[in-house]
Amino acid sequence: KTTAKQRSVLLRKWHDLIITNKDDLARILALEGGKPLAEATGEIMYGASFIEWFGEEAKRVYGDVVPSPFGNSRLVVLKQPIGVAGIVTPYNFPNAMITRKVGAALAAGCTVVVRPAHETPYSALALCELAQRAGIPPGVINVVTSSLYNTPDVGGELTTNPAIRKVSFTGSTPVGKLLMKQASSTMKKISFELGGNAPFIVFDDADLDTAAEHLIACKFRNSGQTCVCANRIYVHERVYDEFVDRFVALVKEKLRIGHGLDEGTTFGPVITARGLEKVEDQLKRAVNSGAKVVLGGKRPDLKVAGHFFEPTVLTNVSDDVPMSCEETFGPLCPIYKFSTEDEVISRANNVPVGLAGYFFSRDIGRIFRVAEALEVGMVGVNIGTVSSEVAPFGGVKESGVGREGSRYGIDEYLNIKTLNIAF
Image 1 (cartoon, rainbow, N blue to C red):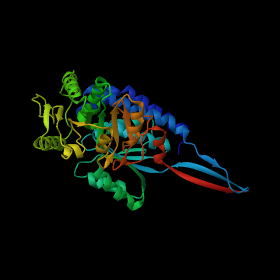
Image 2 (image 1 turned 90 degrees about the vertical axis):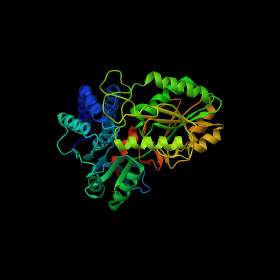
Image 3 (image 1 turned 30 degrees about the horizontal axis):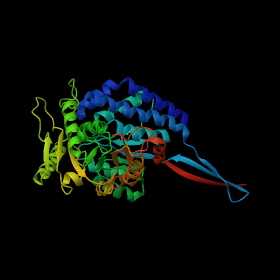
Image 4 (image 1 turned 30 degrees about the vertical axis):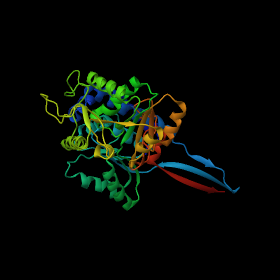
């Protein structure tokens, strides 16, 4: 057993080693996932922020003293570590998705078994090495790598073994439903961050240059492979043509496709072959239904190998094609036209998931109306980002349960115990 103070010190040492070795960690991440080096470095710093945050939160796991209805007793509420936690992480953020979960678990006093994505195992192993150097004892952080073939067996063990009392998973909604069903066999506590289909709304009173700048990052960061990236872009009919022109010009100016370690690269590949096939299938179906490709739309002619696809902008996209109804997880940017506030809210909410949403407006009344009406767990207003170590991260509907990061994140790894002490 360790004290909260001891865990805090160990997490601070781990954080400092991550920062000291950020260049090596970023290079590993760029090589195994294809991210441009600057973006990979950004993920390392983002990931480290969770270790720092939860190292500080370890000392703030407070209980309560509750007034008893009886004079001869006292009610005390304790928070205790839940036990061993199974951690299953995706390939798109192979560093930060581990630190956001493991940082909270260790701060609470839990041990973990981490199953990183089979596409990106090296970032997990590097983090584990640095944790050992920081003095975190052997057996506290355990990394189990696996092939695609063995992934179901590993996931099944983590969700059904009674020694594991908590499962945290980031990934697709269908896999999340399967893991949730398996975890129910032993009634494990779960926190699942699942798929999204984020709307990005530009009202006619928005600052169009600001909206276009933020859409570049919100849509094309990590080549569109983020669960909170803009998936459906709705632009008011009065500013539609102007916005499309500004945005397309900005994409041409800002994004350069290439190998992640090449100087000047700002846009990398889709990580998996099946991901690229999904992008091409969604594009084909949209075009066959009348969509117009105004930029991109094909694999680029590059000298480096990889699953590259051009950043692609489309107009005249139907609401009924897969691109509009499913998470793309790739560099397709469909831009839809809308007329009224009520209409766009209805269309934005017309999906089974609800992770993140974004909109741009300078009308203070509209800001509150739309922010409260969007059926999502996180809303970016006049900004294309929603995540930091201090803000709760998570969704509603079929986008999962629980929250990560923030002061709420550590509660996912704690049990509440009530003591009724008579005297």
